[in-house]
Image (cartoon, rainbow over all chains, first blue to last red; front, top):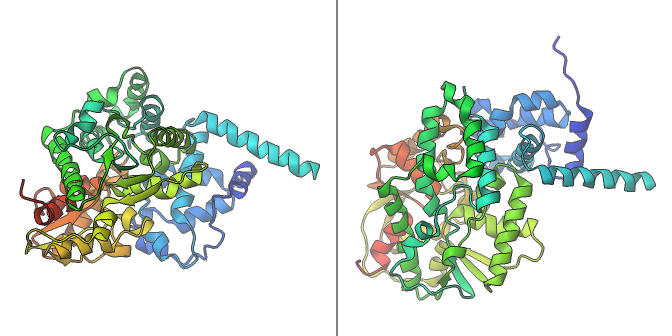
Length: 124
Length: 322
């Protein structure tokens, strides 16, 4: 049986971003049916991996993430109101910063913000 | 081998940070369309092009270049282009836009300005300060560089005392109207597309044009900005019989353009699917209201379907003959 590895750092980045919202997805498949790019791009599968913190599986899909047209055909028809294109943009931003090494100053700013929040939470 | 996404996005971001546009061009080229139209400099209400129509000929040329590189060993050397581009504006040298394209897109802007003048709208133009709004950086997820750029645009607009923006394309409209307020403090400039301004003006045509035209809604106008009825009201008011393709209005189908720089072959497939839908509507020609759609559909149609920007169709009816 294939094993999958949960990346806690990635899972935390997703959970604390406030920008990724796929928890409402009920896997109905409307997004896949509407997508002009066809079955290569399945938001419901991709987002499930994100929600589970499966970083390497998500990064394997980098090309697919950048192939999204951001046309919102899926989002227009999503019965769960998932902000699919915003989620795709969030994943692009993560890949830009963590894989491509782009947007370095913003990456540092995001990290220090998360650390500050953690200190604040620890102080209670 | 597919094109290296990181290097291409990186090149666009480098350009945005160093030269204020994803594909920088001279002010002379960006503002040439306005020559002879007597549009005042600046003012509270300005026609804001965001240089999108002016950029398209360069993007089309760049995509042609990338298409030849895609799936060859040359993809391995795109990173060199990115580094060289940091020193010199390689994107302007490597892919020279076709003269006919430059003229075609300039004509669209001229017609938009003439339509607004005809409707009695008072507006200025920022000429050299008419900055790119940053849509490609935002869509690529480069949020830090995008926010820095948006702050520069906002500061310029404040300095020039602009209170209302009349935009000409869906992407710039979306950036300024819906995205800037989420990343900038105190961005309160009113943003309207020229189609909304013209539809509200209730223009009467100088002559009616009796032709069938199939309409291609831009995804961004239809699903992001709710601009759906305005182009129809204006076309029908001019006498056109508007035909709707299989996917239309909120359910419109993408032209493929948004991914043409990274995945040129896939973009063309999507464009061809859409052209087929438009052809099936059986009109004399197709019309759209977005420079990216215009370029993508023109390429995909390859002469099998006439595709024209809506401004040219409207000017035929609402403006005096040139």
